[in-house]
Length: 406
Ligand SMILES: CC(C)(COP(=O)(O)OP(=O)(O)OC[C@H]1O[C@@H](n2cnc3c(N)ncnc32)[C@H](O)[C@@H]1OP(=O)(O)O)[C@@H](O)C(=O)NCCC(=O)NCCS
Image (tube, rainbow, N blue to C red):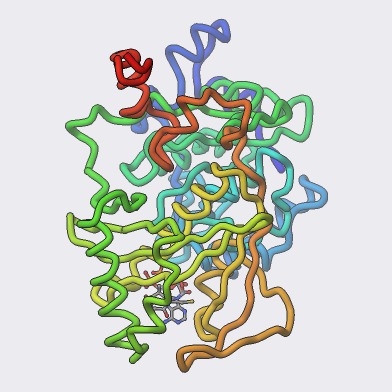
């Protein structure tokens, strides 16, 4: 969904061969000041979005509805940027002449963009990252920037260079032959990849090397890990004791129901303090997520979402594509935000709360563990299948005399 002045954009980004252009004028190298001289970018309200999208409709047939742009901006205000010439900008009555809209996508949203399952005209909000949430990919959703305001496109994209977005790849779908080269001067190249998937019809601005050196990265203080020790299990028990037994008055025998030793547990730490957990149990055709808990002092900051993302990822790597859970009826939204959907009317009640069945139908991870994998990979610690484990290092010791019966 693109309409803009290609020549102008080229001039803005610089001239030369594609090689020299991408090296010398790529998005991350252009000076914002040069571009900012003549244009201004700003956010607008619902009416502002409607008038800009209506104007764009003349140039872009099949453009997404005004309401959809507004819903996405409601969900994440950093998605819709109006553009105008600096000399026409009036803060008292800011009016745009063009716009650029993006979809900051979650992990599952980015997967779906690449494999074609994301409905980019009517995206489900569960696949759009919220304002303070780091997206897994950024999709250039629509551009309407004709004439000299096209020069502001790099300005908008530079909004996605803050620490929250650094290193996140930007994707676009050129719909016309001309559109194919629209973003090329900024560093976009044909073909897009994510999480082992590849889409030849998309363009991608690869920013994986744009991650700041380790010392300057603000350390992500949140971790979600597979429980591997008794100490970590004690932390899980403490969290569930506080959340379920103390808050929800769940009897001990019901909370610790005899299934804890036949499950995988994930523990979430924030600033080194255990704050949340989840339990996963495995069946032939599906994995069941349960006992999701975040201590009340850690709530409202997206930790449940982080824990669910980690659990979903682990299950997909183990080869599961169907994930099942019982959601407390009042907390359905927590699950729906991660793509789970209600299954039917087999509602249930236990431990004094009412539950509904929810299911996520996803795809197994492209690198999920199978019998054809190296046997040393299969014996690596759960969830760390990309890194050599302690047992394969032990192979270097060879076979001991006891093994040969000597
Ligand atoms: C449910 C629980 C895990 C949510 O943890 P959290 O870290 O606060 O959740 P998040 O911040 O990731 O919220 C994700 C979304 O869930 C929804 N949500 C969270 N708590 C909610 C609540 N109490 N009621 C309704 N929706 C809620 C919100 O929509 C939120 O998104 P938004 O506010 O950005 O729109 C936490 O409140 C908890 O441990 N509760 C007690 C244990 C429990 O009942 N577990 C669930 C069993 S199904």
